Image 1 (cartoon, one colour):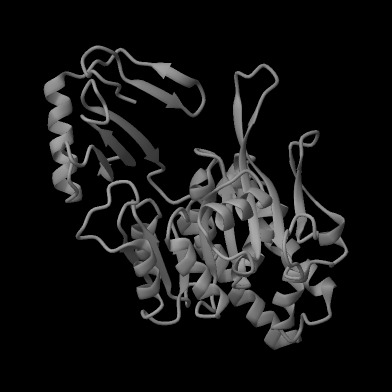
Image 2 (cartoon, rainbow, N blue to C red; image 1 turned 45 degrees about the vertical axis):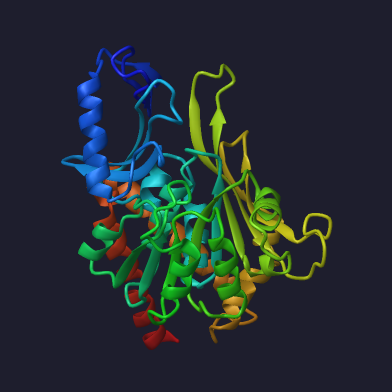
Length: 393
């Protein structure tokens, strides 16, 4: 964070391990004006008295960051900056298992849901890690599926996925903050994406008029593959409340949501430490009319247990009572009416994620957890499954 007036205070950093830190770096006003000019030129977006906010991204050797710049008239004391740094390489589910944000069973369940072409919203508070978890989940999409992304600020790991051989197209929409005239709105971008062929659709963040276009597409079956996006909300009901009451999506259209994955920050008792955890994986059932909470439409498949500090499966998941997972199974001959086979597949995916983590520690090579190996592992999982199917039925 670089606060206004520039030159009067040091740069502050929110550190992964040490929390809020104050540096000994104090930029000059001339440096700040130079940075603002560069971001304006790089983004092609205005930054002036009529447009006092610039929302963009930047990339230098060693890292990428989302950038927010404000100036007069919004900031009375002049320029101010906020940089949110992204991991240079794509996040993966094994990386999250390793840092205990999610356990292997939770990772295996998300892998199964993404592979089953469900619609998933990753919900959480600001900075909880929902965008990173969405990015990791994108690597669970099979490489023979096309992927289209829609973002107003480019954060998803599209370049690295292209390097890994994914058939992926990125679309940049108008920022809801800056409202640049020559950029297409997110709702029109989503409608355009549906004309780009049969594709999985990933929305960087659902937060404005694009919500109606997204649910319209999902409701009529225009998107037959995985649909993923992030949204601010603490739990499944707060997501429903935001989508319906804030974003004006018809409540019956919300039924197009299959799964809500909740990501939140957990604080230590002394308040000094903060941990990011997946706190729930919830399915949205379709048999309700007015209020999904009162009509028991939100059913947890996994729930965070603070005593164990991890996700634990609910009876609904263990007993095979999930309607969404059984709907996935209905499309596969060998799984229909065979919950044991479905459970074995989820467990096998979980074992695979854990095996990568164990091997990384055994070999003292954390590169095993990176996207290159995670994607190869997913490919081999499908190839070996096909081989076993052809040999043994």
